Amino acid sequence: MPSIVWLEDNDYEFPPVEHALTEPDGLLAAGGVLSPEILLKAYRHGVFPWYSREQPILWWSPDPRCVLFPEKLKISRSLRKTLNKQLFTIRQDSAFRDVMELCAGPRKGNDGTWISRDMIDAYSRMHDLGYAHSIECWLDDRLVGGLYGIALGEMFFGESMFSHVTDASKVALEYLCNTIKPKLIDVQVWSEHMESLGAEMIPRKRFIELLEKYCG
Image (cartoon, rainbow, N blue to C red; front, side):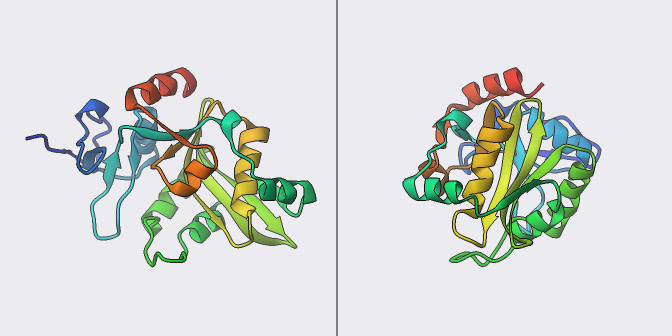
């Protein structure tokens, strides 16, 4: 029976993604640390961390993989109206940690969060090193929406987004797709919300091929 690999703190080698468990979908390894070295290895290997506070660090590579090709972003009529009004000031990397903390905040119908204090500290270090980035929507000098993720080569690995004003996170995503223009956005896990914006599921094998092509 397949079992996941346990990573030691100084272990930066992940097993082949094909070894990931099918149930739960894509669980590949556990343990290790959220150091910049292992996080970079993970993303370049097609793996990302996702775990709850009471769990060890869990590393995933689901099959199929949810992605968004920027040119396939769906702009609804209401979102187009919001974009045309230019309500928000868009900034990059001016409040990275704030974006993470707001992404970790309570959401309607969901009391918990996977964005722990350790995650915030780890990705803030990645930001300081130039790998993690935020796109922010400001309204009257208030941070009202945004997203963050890891940028490697021509890929953007999306981690989370938040919105305190209607369409704010969607405007940040539109900016990512049409201004920054990565070749591919890794959405990681399917959601109805992201599907409505144009995200789609592709086989993990295809994702790895695109990763090798665009990640650099």
